[in-house]
Image (cartoon, rainbow, N blue to C red; front, side):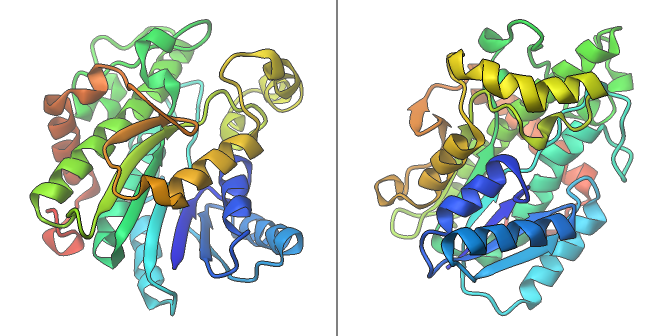
Length: 318
């Protein structure tokens, strides 16, 4: 079996791959933006586990052409059947001024839209029973928007790609950035639930041959690459001080703990067929009320199809 993990060169993605490498029969396709870093991660995993079935592949989720090139290259690989897609890669930017290669707000583009296109283009390559996992965040829920975190704001999907069109955008760019990050994590769950519904309605996911789609919140995980766009002091704080401070914080996990929880969701037999569920670590919990808004999920789907220029030949659901 093949398991695809995006953002696997460091942080949660690396530790997910490391945990999954304990079983030598699995082929792990580790994907990310920096091929040398991925190759280094593969060497470290092989050295630690003896696992040699590691395939590093480059993809820039902020560039839709790169996503299409990646999925096309994937199909040319002589790999075992694809069983699991783990959409882990993500960015957090203290601004909404950063743009993707396609001109969209960067966090929306990477955290949601790139994965939206990647999953659609690989749907017919998945061999059921199969699993799709999206790494979201507790910040998708306004109840958890405390301290520097901002609650999400979903009005129209188009405004997430082009925040300058949103008349309710905060004047403070850092607050707008925090809001955009939380909203991109809400999009992960909206998409997961909508994808689950549509796979079942189309008969592509059945009780006998399920494709389960779930979302995962890793908790507060300091020291990952998520803070790489912050200013120098904040990067130092995130990578050096925060990992020590977070040991006493409720809901905090190390990258290893979060990665092992995500690996558990990817392979545990007890979870086979369980779909449309939100997990905090290994426990299923209720996601926010807004994440169950089917009108917003439908708007996000329609907007994402248009923004990614997804064609009928690229997905069995379009």
